[in-house]
Length: 225
Image (cartoon, rainbow, N blue to C red; front, side, top):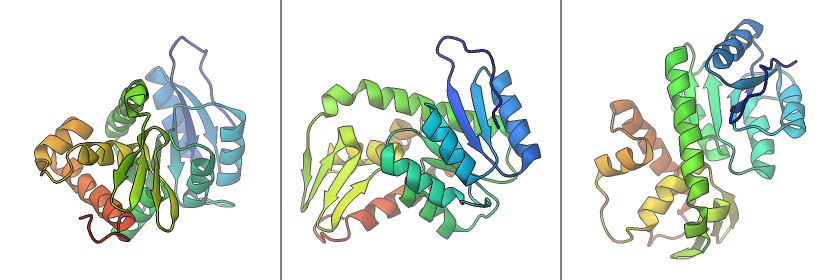
C-alpha cells in the first residue's frame, strides 16, 4: 500500500515500513504535511518490493515485523545500496539491538514512543548529511590506507583482512574525520559538531555507539585504536 502526495520539485521521497497500521498512517500523513512524498508498506516483504520499485531519499524501518523483520530488510537494502539513509524504529531500548542495527548499516534509530518533531529533526539531519557527502564525493574519490585496512570513502567501503565491510553514511562521515587526523586527537565536541551539528548528550551517546562499532571493524589490526 502506498500514500503519495502530488509530486513537487525537490520533494523528498520517504519509504516507511511499519506493521502497525495506525502508526504507519500517522507517520505517512505527518511527513506529507511536512512536504515529503511517502510510500507506506506494512511488512518487510512489501517494503523490499516497494524499495525495488522506487527510488527513495530515506527509509524508515520498524524492526519487529511479520514475514521479514527490519534487520533482514536493512541487510537486503544495504547489499544493493550503501548510501540511502536508514532510520530504525524499535520498541526495544536494549543497547544490543541498537548496535546490531547500526552494524547492519542503519544511520539512526528511534525508540517508541517518540515525538514526531524529533523524528522530523532526525530525518532532516540525515537528508542534509546525505547531500553534503554527495557534494564532497569528488574530493573523496581515492583510497585511504589505515594499517592493514583500505578505506574507500566514495564507496563507503572498508577492505579488511577478513573481507569487505559496507559502511553507513554516518560511519563514513566519522571515519573520514578520524582518517584526516591520524595520530592526532580530535576533540569530542568538535567531532559531534562536525557530524551532528550539536554536542548534546543524546548525540554524545550516539557517538559512543558508532565509535564502538568502528573499533570492532578495526579489531584485526591492534595498531589501530
